[in-house]
Length: 367
Image (tube, rainbow, N blue to C red; front, side, top):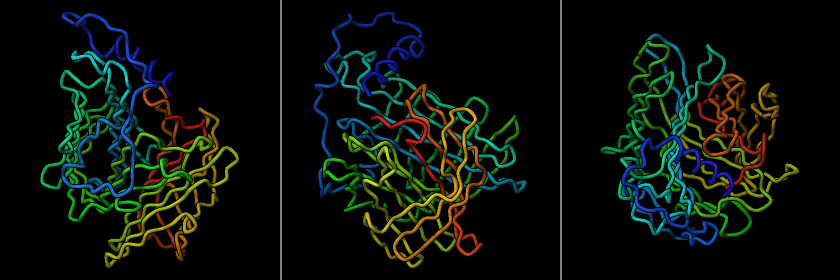
């Protein structure tokens, strides 16, 4: 991880800040490996809107929203917006805004079935000079890329390289605390955990601009917020994850953590029924079984893009909108992953829509 962080920091120093005038004298950087990060422990006692904000004492954090919309002309589109925060452990004693102690990244993508692949862009910078993730509210800014919450509505403004997203995602529910009151285990050891909060069934409105054409869109989205300092077991290589909104008002989050041989190290999730009943899913209640694979012509990774998912007593088929939804973020987070819009099907009937996230198939995940 630290090798990746150092490469990213070098990139940021060379390209993100155009001028070093009036920077304070250089100091020897702190050893990131010696940094004491905050730990994830049970019974977090989360409070909102405060805990929608940043938690800079932890090593890693992300705010993630995915959704499916329809344009005014009837075209289906999927979208993903993710902001990351990473505590590098470098320059924490410095008062300079140039100190790279907190690094921010962002990814945005549009899944366009008519085009058959993702439109993707990414952004990165150190906290400071107007780049910030506030601690008492959801308000994240990376230059002109922003995501904030105003009166239970998430507002995302993403002026990407070849598309623009201007979306409002209204929440009408209480935060869904994953795991045990927001303490979400990710491995055999209790330290392998995150704090994890979701907002399913967000109502989307706004505009998407592609190839110079702006259209109004409406649809549904899923929001996740996680923060942690130790996320993966040492022998974990990646995960399979699904966040899905059902047409009847229900929702589902399910995941499994895999080792190098494909064995399942941990699994879990949450099922929300149409009447609002919340069912917690333990590691034995979740099973992903690949039924369709796709090999990337770029990375050579073999992705299980079509999956049969068993959660409790229910069985669903996960069908991708199209196969090529691979996202290469090697230049920022160092991760290659498959992040795709999918339909949730049973007996050939669509029950809902969601996003499937697959990691560790191109190369092992390192935090």
